[in-house]
Image 1 (tube, rainbow, N blue to C red):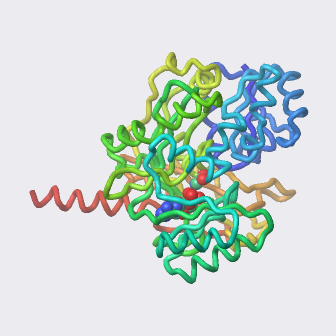
Image 2 (cartoon, helix red, strand yellow):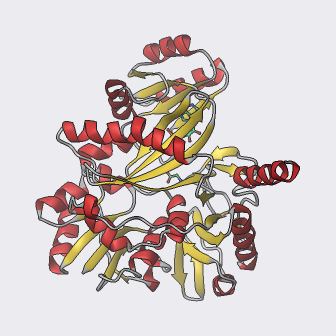
Image 3 (cartoon, rainbow, N blue to C red):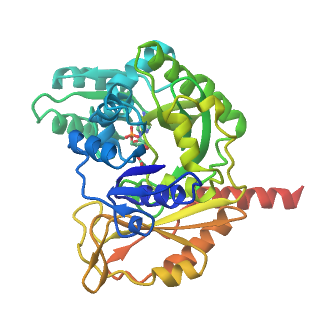
Length: 429
Ligand code: AMP
Ligand code: GLY
């Protein structure tokens, strides 16, 4: 079968790498792709916002499955356009993708279905926003509605910071926002495949959203991640699926807009149990890199079962018992304006050490690979536990030569600290 993969990040490089190992794959096409993806796929020039062009390409190249990596084409309804032409798609249609595209939509769905999440008010004016701030006090969370690439959320610790955030938001015309109660706890990501009926848990991860070590500084798309996230115990995972994911899938199906694809639930593990922070309608980046490093099944066969509504027939999902950890190398300046064009070397040397280097914002220039974006590489390793995967990943990072880049040295610190505590406790008892 021929497959078309849309996207150009580290997430899509990881998907391409795994799809290329699928027995049923004939030709993998990727658009727009990147030089890393090009090792596994034929790169084609296709604009995902041009639904007619994507559909015509799929029909003209006997594409049996289109895999949509990023959120924008999902929220834009590309899956619906492809379905209308009888092309199978991994990823939800526009109506179900509102789970990611509109925070207000998701909060209303949670309220109707009794799904545990932070208390909230949807507001459309500065006056309403101020009234909501009166109600919640500080700390409080202010979120712009709509896709914001991780930048539309302010966790305000003081009333003044919250006032500034709403003033900023409502300076724009037609703004909509959600004001939320602040939830205390540790964050974890849960991935679940669904065809709208059947649920198939697809791994856990924890990412590092802040740019600086110790989880400080501005938010980014993610500076690193590891899997599994043991803080989500099997019992908590079952609880989160029963109380959060399953009722969401049921509510969307009942509304006539079933969700098909991967549901990425951002959870807060609070003192009173897991609560939903947000949904994404696609794999996380860089969470996908660590999931793919551990996934031992046939990705194409699994994705086809999702796309065809046959998930109940899918082979059991197998993940390695090993942990995986990925470190993002970003271009200096990210998440602000990144330095473009920095030379990148040492990928082969790093891979010779057993790590896998997924490419994100890269471009092939006349004299070699250069940076072309914010997040550039995701250096990914596995190991018997998170500490071992972390040590292996940083050995790989140290083999990379990217003078215009930077990375965090502490990816996975929570899990590593927890493992050390457990070992110490074990030694005492
Ligand atoms: P979101 O884009 O909704 O995932 O929010 C971005 C980040 O803001 C999350 O990863 C959390 O760290 C934080 N956050 C969002 N909502 C809340 C909340 N209600 N309580 C505490 N932190 C939150
Ligand atoms: N790493 C977070 C995301 O993909 O949304």
